[in-house]
Every structure is written in C-alpha cells, then in structure tokens.
Image (cartoon, rainbow, N blue to C red; front, side, top):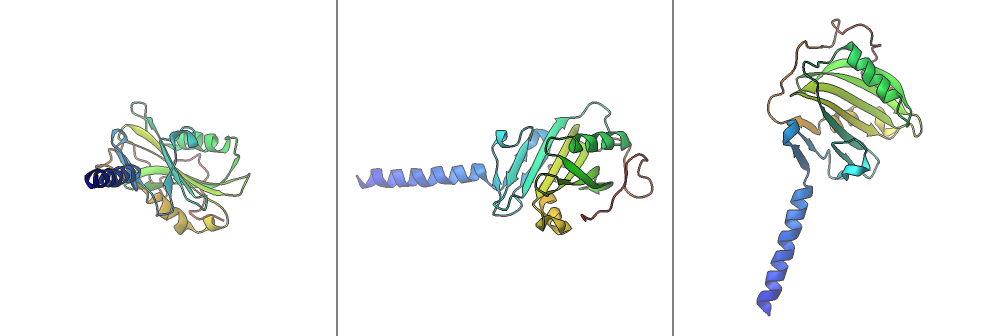
Length: 194
C-alpha cells in the first residue's frame, strides 16, 4: 500500500513538472528560427485562438501584451518604403482603430525593421509594432501597454527584448537603414511616445 501511494505521489510530481516545463518561460519556434520569452514572471502564454492570427502571444495581469505573427515571405521580398506604408495602413485600418503616433526605420537584433507606434482609440493603450523580413519570413512583433504606464519607452524595450532569433538571421538585400538613407514616402516620427 505504501508503495502505491509513493508511486502515485511521484507520478503526480513528475506530471506537474512536465506540465510546467511545457508551459515554460520560453517558446522556441524552430521552423521560424525564433523564440519568445515571457518578459517577466507575471506574464502567461495565451491560447492560439485568444489572439486571431497570432503565431504566439502572452499577457500579464496589467493588460500588457506581446504578440508575434509570422508569415512566409515571397521570394526576394525586402523591407522598403512601400511595404512600410502598407504595414501602417493595415495597422491603422483595423477595427480597434489604431491612431498612428510615429514610425521609423531602425535595426532590431541586427535586422532592418520598420517600427510603428500608435494608440488604440478605444482604450488609449499604446502599441509598438515592428515589421522585419529575415530567414525567408515576414515577422510582425507587437507590444501593447495600457496608458499611462506605456509612455515610458523602457517599458516597451523590456517587452521587445522577449524576442530572439535562433541562429544568425539571414537578411535579404537591399538593406533599409535608419538615418538619412531612409526611403522617402514614410512620415518619420520620433522614437518616443508623446
């Protein structure tokens, strides 16, 4: 009898350990050559159907969200002013009504990207969304923070640090960089939220 109870307890402990490991603080998306970590202990993973179209998403009890969407990029697809304009238009036309606050080209983990900053009209939450192309995929990585806590750029930096590449990213040419060589046609904003 004692053996059966000990066996049941050991089995229960192992089951909990495997379940917590499966939920873990990092999710590796090997096919997309990237991983996402929970930004801090208060974050939990969301189910696939909680955020439509998301490849992976998490949130915390303060309604901060991190959302990753990944699609296969068409051959020879690269980031330029036209793609950035389409990205902004798509973000602004969503039903939740995102008001554009700024946008600029920058480098994210060694990869050229376009970053749009906006405010969700319905609840004044701030969103920072980055689009980048590498490894044959188009990535959209978003962080959302409720106002007024979202006004501190360091809050977004912490959430953006949750993303990492698995291996060195392969960047398609031509490269888009920040500074005076940024393509025309995209209104540039500051790197700060108002």
